[in-house]
Image 1 (cartoon, rainbow, N blue to C red):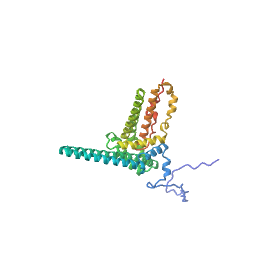
Image 2: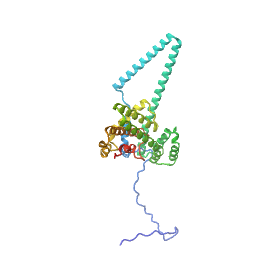
Image 3: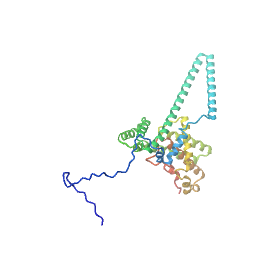
Image 4: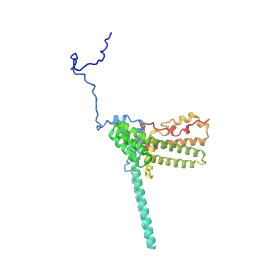
Length: 348
């Protein structure tokens, strides 16, 4: 029969019957304390980043963050652009000189038009450069958020959250969310928790807007394709809707893509679609279509509308993943069945 341990009892400190055992206590288990500024091994940081996020980062590096080296094609296009610029400049010079030769007033008018055109070109170039730089900064912020959350880096999390607040400072509808995140930044010590609060407060409402845009675009594409009389009209409409959708999603998350910004963004989206396997990732699209028996229950034109709607929604989801300033951590990334459930409804 085992002896029961003695029960705890109260005693007085000056009781002479109390004996003090001064033998050293056994050593506590050794703990490893890592400084906040000490870098965490890259393997440990990347281990907690899921595969989907790594695919998004790879797509961004291939698109927005890639720095293409000088190639023969690039050299040829640069030379052609230079020749075209020289030809246009020479033509404009001859035109203005001819106008001055005919009448001084015509020459002055032509010169004024030329200066206005040049100022507009410079303004457009500056806007394109700023747009590309802004979209690149958002892509870099996305990767930095993923690494900071995986490493639970408090200093990096605070810096990135401040950048996220500054990104939406000019949008009045985010004022309450920005105030909530700023309060959290003063109270929360853990970097991962701070990033999660910023995602809930600032990015969740934007996610809902972006998913709404994807759903509306998929509806329009599926409907127009089903009733369109010509295939060429389908192609033009689908391409126009995809371009509009990508631009709109970029604007929702803080980007302002111009022409070249949209081209770089399209490269990232194309890379993301290629890396994730196109339409088959995240949702078993083909299995759902076959399972619902859509191919045998609807007409060929409506079937084309469904497939074009799925394609539009898939491109929109890739744009959402690439344009979002931070990866999905608190919420699950949306899938096709989340943004376009009407495309999977079973016909009666």
